[in-house]
Length: 100
Image 1 (tube, rainbow, N blue to C red):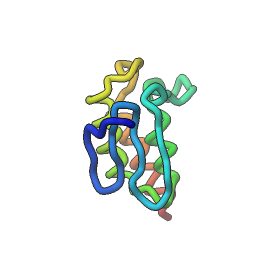
Image 2 (image 1 turned 120 degrees about the horizontal axis):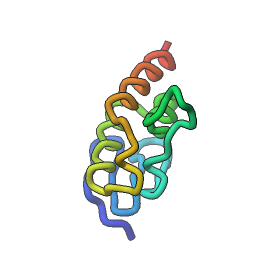
Image 3 (image 1 turned 120 degrees about the vertical axis):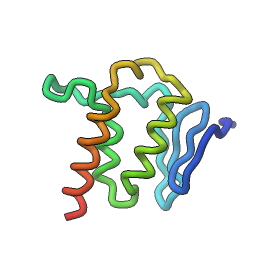
Image 4 (image 1 turned 180 degrees about the horizontal axis):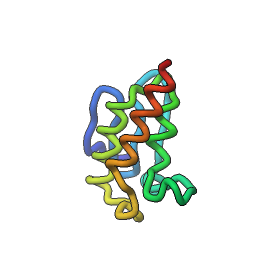
């Protein structure tokens, strides 16, 4: 059983990764948190914020808060490659487009 380290109203961070608390069961394993978008133009852009920006059931701000907590608390391999500010900016822009 995973040990909960942090949570907001939508997501929890545990020692094995992060999981949604909402209407859809969703889990991101610790060893997958630092996956990047495969493109030179988007170097350092984390995949998960962009993927979650497209989900209608997952408000982006609670996800971004939890994702940042997961990176800080779990320090998964590859965390140093992520440009968190750029990743969050792209995800927010994408979430706005998804809402329209």
